Image (tube, rainbow, N blue to C red; front, side, top):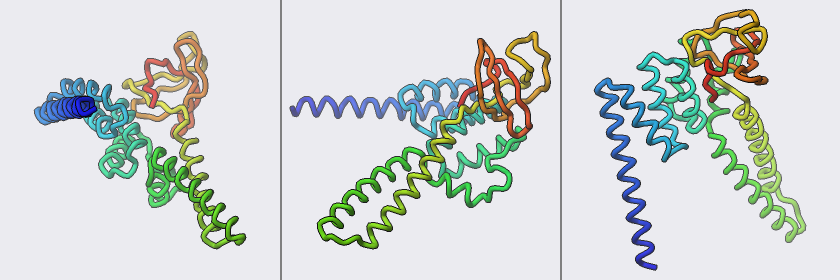
Length: 239
């Protein structure tokens, strides 16, 4: 048993050291202005740490420096979903979206309300709702034993229901089939094919919602531009 524990600890330390070396190498390459090489290092590390928001953030920085604003937006957005409270991630996402003609905070929504809505990640909200659910169950048991409903039970129930509603709306947004224009200019056509006329051109970095797909085409809505049509799948990066 001791040998097994020792082996597990050694493996963990080796993996941790490997990850740290990869990050340091990527950061050094980035500081040297070798953004393409740094990007490769970060994307390699992402295979081992797929839920690390700061890897997506650094990948977004590399793409931004390389002039790929659309891919930068996609990766900043992935980082934002995992770590919505991080100021640097939020700042870079908002800045890159504005440069593309988009906004992180929808028109008419107070910034403070938007920040409050994204004060917790979806994973943190799920954990909160789970803990509150068991708190409600415990309160129910206590109230049944005492044969009296307490104010604490009502408060916990209200907080649980509010948190559950918060989680529901967050998951609704997270599950939207979002994508970003990843090429310098994408054509929006009236149908799924080059034989259909192009109705508009849209630049990289714009957010779209995917409605349908057919062959190598997506039907999308570009809310910020009031456009709807079909775009070649290769022109989009799904978030």
